[in-house]
Structures are given as C-alpha cells and as structure tokens.
Image (cartoon, rainbow, N blue to C red; front, top):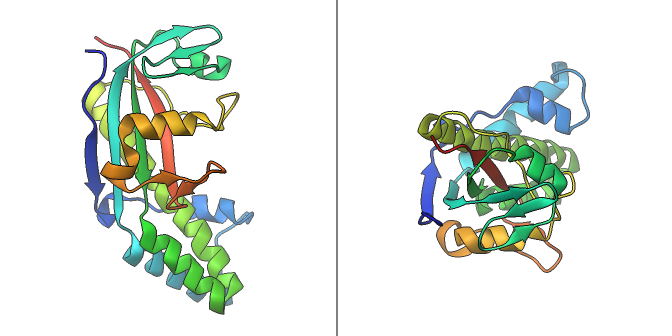
Length: 201
C-alpha cells in the first residue's frame, strides 16, 4: 500500500468533548466563569453544541522520513520538527475535520449583536473542533495502537502552505466541505488538519 482511499466520516455532538478548561484558556482566563458571566457562557456552549455538524476525512499513506523532512509520496514537507515527530514511522494518517459552517454563522450572528457573546462563542467553537480532532486521534489509536501526537501545518517549522497538499490529498473540499482561501485560511474557520504517524506492526 502506498496510499489508502479517502475515508469520510461524521461525528455526533455526543462524541465531542468541549473542554471548559480549553475554552477558558482560549479566552486568556485562569478560572472558569462565575456569577453574572455563567449564563453567558452557558448560552454560548448550548449554541455551539446545537450548531455543530462535525464531518471530516482521513487518508493513510506510506512515508519516508529523513532528518530534514518527510516524503509523503504525494508531496514533500521540509520540516525537521515534523521529521522528529514521525521518526521511526513508516505510515501516516492525514486528516481534516470541521465543526461545520453553522458554527461560523452562529459566531457571525453573535458578532452583530454582542461582541462579548461572539468572543465566548468563538473560544467555545475552537474547543469544540479541538475536541473533534481529539476524537479522531482516539479512533486512530484504537485502530492502530500507538500513534504519534497530532502535527498540523503552521506548527513548528512545518510550512502553513502544506495545508494545500494535505487538503488536496484527502480530497477535503469534496468529501468534508473544507476549503482553503488564498491566504491559507481554512473554511469553515473552525476546522483542523493534521498528520499523525503510526508504526506498522
């Protein structure tokens, strides 16, 4: 096997853990909200959960790792940090997952009426898509055993431009509705792409 087929998937809201610790961190807060702020946060969490429509796609490929980067077969990534992450791996899973366009629309709706609500909803939505990515990683761990930590374009010295190659390889636009702007922003905004290494047994 050089390349596996693209594998589209959907996740129900019940499969997504929206970490309070995570969205509080995104907001730059040290502790969860209390008092008058609690209803605002509760409303935003409910709103994001109701808007979630999580879908994604993953694809496996054989890789060749060298100290200065990784050859995926369909593209080469010049990144010593990615090479270090994937050391001793001969397979990788690349995936893209999104919280869905309705979440982006919800944040835009809040922006028009309440900047505070929009700010909180944005943080909650970021935590939600991180939860979705974590759910994908958990599935990969069940499937393959040990897997390496997620590594995304723009992290370390992996160029953000690798986003184009990754999305093209997994067929993200057609199979998960995830596209890329000319300035390399994912659409829907609350989307994540990543590479995870596995060692073939």
